[in-house]
Image (cartoon, rainbow, N blue to C red; front, side, top):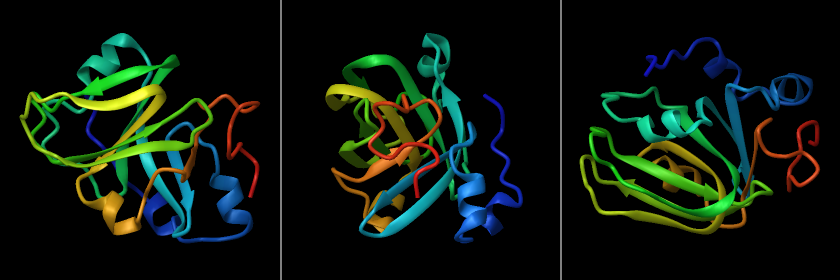
Length: 160
């Protein structure tokens, strides 16, 4: 797992207008939109069986506005666990359109208890534990990323 590096993107996170659109839909970023506004995370993408199996295992710390986006080839029933993961995580489960279906808060480090995402999940965003509640993420909010098929996306790249 490469170490997470957070640079000037954090400073740009709060910019609006043209700068926000210029940053929209980068492979290393996920945006989430809901009643709270828009929030952007710097992400690593896990889109192969091997990278999804590795996930955030053995990562001891992660910058605040960072995470990992798990991308599956098609919607399916997914379940996660925290074996070998030393930091608490929030797991955000989204369908093929990028619409959040479930948020699991504060997954317990090293716990082997399965955390089901539900049926029809194609994207899972893992972020530092507690952030989902801090921002108010909930089912029905939408995320966007280039991996989300644009003709199906609830919030496509390029849309405000």
